[in-house]
Image (cartoon, rainbow, N blue to C red):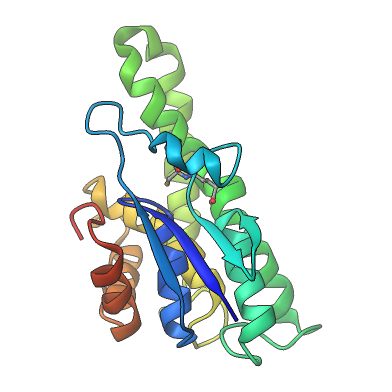
Length: 208
Ligand SMILES: N[C@@H](CCC(=O)N[C@@H](CS)C(=O)NCC(=O)O)C(=O)O
């Protein structure tokens, strides 16, 4: 088995390191640093994949992109049933939904806010809709968290790993008071030994 993570500092790639640590798999990290001015990934990542983005996983020489697909692949191939519900169960469908929701839906208003914030007054007509969508998606996540502090069932799953990134952004935006369950979820995930080892190995991860 050869697993290599092409890891960009301060990025979604943190989730992949975390998943690998939870699975206790051996892996290598190739580190890439964001440009200090543009915050973009360095051109070397384009030698691995045409989009030059992270995370990228190399599994025995096959490059897998998209954090959701990478984590699902790791769980399916190496998880032996851990960190996801039994196939065919009602929870499995919810899990599938969340695995896609994290990048497919939750990140859209977050990225719109990030990019339009650079336009100043020119973005004013868009801001109410973006703010409303941001609140709608964060509020939905807040309401969907189970009393156990997980998104599916009562144990850690890939869905929690994927949703940690938008939840962290809500907290980083200073919205932990508005979304206390999301804030508690982020704190609980970060308290996991596997998350902390991944954080140490991965290097800089925003203010966390
Ligand atoms: N939906 C993709 C997003 C990948 C992505 O946009 N990664 C960012 C890091 S969070 C990146 O590489 N940005 C650097 C750049 O675009 O230059 C995934 O979840 O893997």
